[in-house]
Length: 444
Image (cartoon, rainbow, N blue to C red):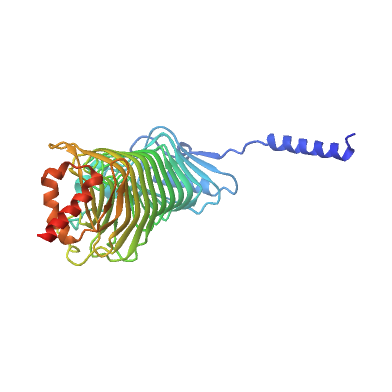
């Protein structure tokens, strides 16, 4: 016989379940920018109206807020959205945000800037149009000291536990998305587009960031699809299509003092199509700081007519001649790098270039199942060159050990390897022939 106490307990639990299940869902309060003075005519500057909407959304005492940009063209001068804001906030963009064509009309280094915010969500079917084509001819600061400052499209600084989803960024004046000191941030379903000859239009650039996830994103620009700078750790990149552009680059590193280590990068299930580089790590010679680049995994990556599919360059010099060239070797230590199942085509016969520092040779570099074919005039198997590398090559194509090659030996060998019959050997065998040439050279 069921006791009265047991029956009472069961009834209480039932009422509690009903109360929880029937509790109404608290929806965010929606702030439509049209209701606060914004005009989608493509001419009126809506910066003040957008700032006003942001302040109203952020002053809510409780509950989340949603700022909604409907369809239409909203001309927008430089604007900043600044926290802190203790509640979650959404920014849904279904219209087009139109930047000033004249770069001097944006009075800040980033067109749309978010700072000091937690739990921010940016999404929608809309477009950020940077109108960069009017600014690209002015992007010549490496030779013109009077060049105007060009703004990046959207920036995030000290923004945590946030995401951006499905937005399109078109024709930025400089970079498209810039991240600094951002932690736990997801980027998914984003489209980034600029012509292949548009200067310095990096797709996604980040420094001093951690726990960033980039997935299912299409990037085609005139510079790096993704640029990873000092102090970035725990970055996961998957299902990204890159091209045109300069690939996924770590660096450049070592030029400035007090740079921080870059660690724990994973790039997987990604396609590079027509890019100048694919996988790229670049550091300056005569480094101003010592740092470590380590624990990188590149896996299941397709190269389609890529200039330099795998490129570690510790003699980076973007505009020769460089003042750093003859002052010393790179002090950036690259180690624990795994490249697995990298396949496709290269338009350069040297598909794998591992040019590491003499002072700090690359350590524990693994090449596994590398299959890259040359698509140039002399079609066939591509070659590889290594300098100051300790590591291994293994997998389906055979097995060998990478030898640490000194500067004198690589200079003596490079011409022979590219121009003789061994130009068409498969990658896993190339270091055996390097060792053979070194032996012949030493005997002679």
